[in-house]
Amino acid sequence: MGKIAWVAGATGAIGNQLVKLLNQSPEYDKVVAFVRKPVTNNWETFSKVKQWVVDYEQLEIPQGEEAQVDDLFCALGSTTKKTPDKKAYYQIDVQYPINFAALGSQQGASFYGLVSSHGANPKTLSNYLKMKGELEAKLQEQPYSHIAIARPSLLIAKRKEYRLVEHLSGFVMSQLPGNYKAINAVNVATALIKSANNGHSGVEILQSKNMQSK
Image 1 (cartoon, rainbow, N blue to C red):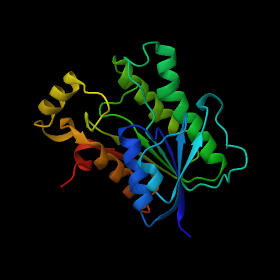
Image 2 (image 1 turned 90 degrees about the vertical axis):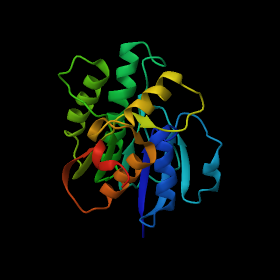
Image 3 (image 1 turned 135 degrees about the vertical axis):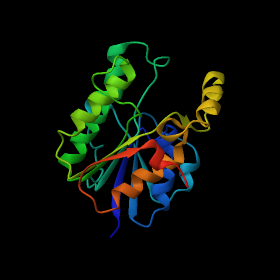
Image 4 (image 1 turned 90 degrees about the horizontal axis):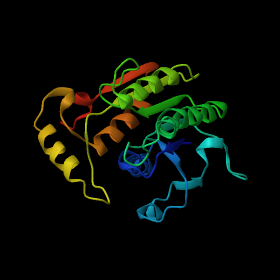
């Protein structure tokens, strides 16, 4: 029997790649995509994928669904533009991933793969990086035998809307070395799935430079 994976933030750049790659992976028999509303896209061709419409404020297993799970992958996150209210932003970027972790641990999951950010630090002045640092710390209080924390630099990904500033920043950062170099979303998803199946235990930090495709 293959494993069962849950994906939170499944419709985002990295989350979508996680769903696609987990569906292709022989390690998994079932992939559950947590969504706020039903999604109609190419997932319909993914034989292993099932959608659960959930409320992250009161996260629970949908009625009638099997709760078994092995590995969790979390790519939840917002932006200041989408969520200008700091309290709401904190809920999405910190509390929702912890709610997801708590639900998974209750169902016996042993692995949690988190998309954080390069520079995450609970003591930094940057509100975004501070939230990511606080999330990392809170996650390590959860009873998982293996936690993988991916810290990507600026993401390179196809988006529905064209963002000029992000496009220009991506071009500049793609020329930078090490952890500052922009990274493709698929590389982050690939690294997290590899981590879930590498047999390690404890906390594993996936630095951006080490997730880059060779």
